[in-house]
Length: 510
Image (cartoon, rainbow, N blue to C red; front, side, top):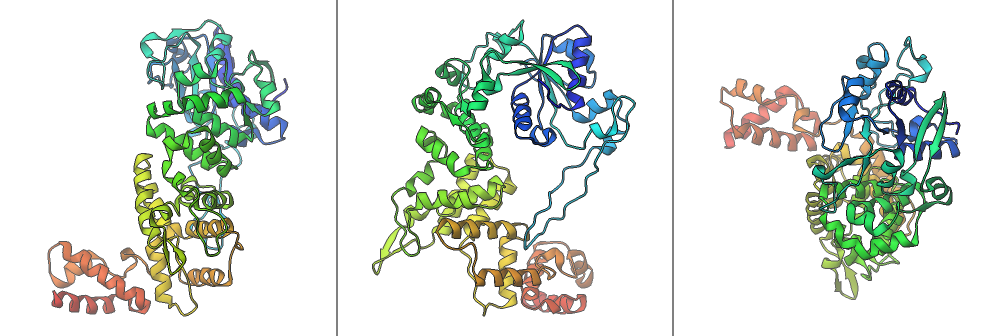
């Protein structure tokens, strides 16, 4: 088939073939390249991970790619994009590869500035400038054919019982889904032969997720494949075949054998897809949700009253469906924002109430974040978004109150909590926004240049020690925090002389 592929991919395949080995591009990259071609998408945007299969052993692979590394027991040798470009002869690859950046956001309150990215990686003797784009890619992974794997723990092959395979078909046979069990063999520039022994292309065209061979066997080998089936369904807008879905229902409890790091990774990818609500529904229908996120199941049949017309469960799904932010942590916060409503449900004066559900919910969200092994920064963000999602605004609120809200939520979370509010409103059947919310946004924009953190003060701890001839100690933080409270009320006090006068009074009081 005619297909446009990056020159780095061609370089790896040709290097292996020139040395007398077989070499194929395999896995998700093949699937995504085909989809990109069918949908007329930029292949460099569609594919960020490239995997290869070969009959060369790890030692033989490393002889061809001296700067590669082999740090596992499963025959996979990896080489970074930077080192590969150097080997290809691209000059100064380390200086022209882009650094990670934040993409621009078209937001009312935008606290992240985008950085510019160069359009090319420069001219090489071997590769034309326009062919190498500055797309940051994951490590290129080259794996020796494998066959006859033995899985002992429902998670990964036993490295002591690995058997190298002899053909590409043997290697493809061990893979999870037919759409991931295709390979491309280089013929000539932009022309490849498709190796497709399990009719993955047919399933891709018919939008079906099917396992390679018996689904029960595939899921007993690696139970995470059940979550991956759901993830691919919502990422690629495909349907899980009846036989595969039935096997997930029958063996869902095996997911408990999988580490939470791996579960979390797949779950967040489901949330980051175009169809997060459908993903949660599939997890529920398959029985996997009870093992992954049982807390939200309690919202089923819990009425809300007031302006709500659905139960807590349905509202949560409707909200995540409407969430405008693709960040999976923001979407997780949206899914969990009412997670404590079932346990705070009360009827007072003939009205349904959920007093303090945001406080209890934030604690529950933090417990979930710990279970999911989320990094501390994401844990904190999740807690904050759930804790303060019930914010409200009235025109009589002072500028100081606006600043205190912004400080409480954190400037880095302002856009995100507004996204959650939009999702919450739309998920309730309300309009996207209101005049109060728009007015609050405008007032927050006006306060963005005001001091909100201790580091914004015109003095620091060193200034205090020098001025009052005191040694370092907890008193510094106490004084600075009290000064910040005053400055939040009256920003004009943020001048060194004014702050020193206030600090003197505070120190005397102690």
